[in-house]
Image 1 (tube, rainbow, N blue to C red):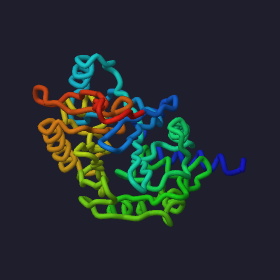
Image 2: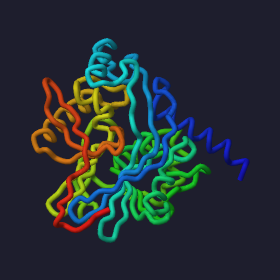
Image 3: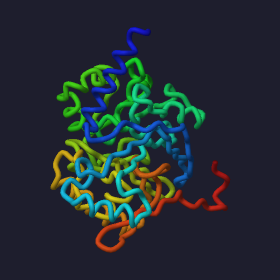
Image 4: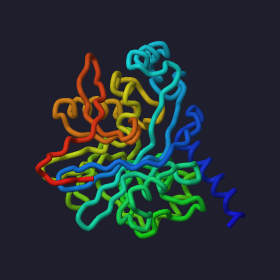
Length: 307
């Protein structure tokens, strides 16, 4: 057992560098937390995993903009001008016949606390029936393996777009993870219903098979936007500013602008895994860009008591 830990740690560090790049700082330790709310007849729970801080140096965020311009946007929002902070969170949905986890965070080997947050919600990894992956960057798939590099959700079907799975298999640093989960993976083509109440939505450009997930119940809908937008401040104020992690910059930028316009017009409920915990709220138009209005959906007092 002890002999495996250094290998698992090395594996995790390699994955993190491959996924997040040297320009991003190390993950920041986070206390476990679970926050539940109702969406129609469904109970959804946001699970904390970790956090990131990236310096405002033009190497990660807004690589096509001036550092001073980014600092101004941050300052106007009441945030420090020299860094951009992100959460790393996952979403859990209890639907008929399924206990579905949307993304998995960084994983235990990178000090992610998803499993502890899951325990705070009264659940264990073995309870999860489905893991739905927005894309293959390590802060979304790292938790698919435990600290020993074994499958962290052994009873779950792991679902991702076929193009994303193909991309993961082509990345040499991801081979240990791919080997650990391959038997559980089931791919899909985007814009298809995966099971009642859950539909995959193509949001192109960030990675080859990046998707969001639309969760619907009782006339209410929430969209998990994956990595369409990273910073609740910078990515919304200036969606034309480029983040270094986008694979296809023109397509990803167009997708971000179009989706934010759509969400602002519809007033639709959003979950963003990188926005401040719990990452649930709405997008509103503001000036040449958008602003984030955090807030869980208001419960109907006549609909029963939900906790």
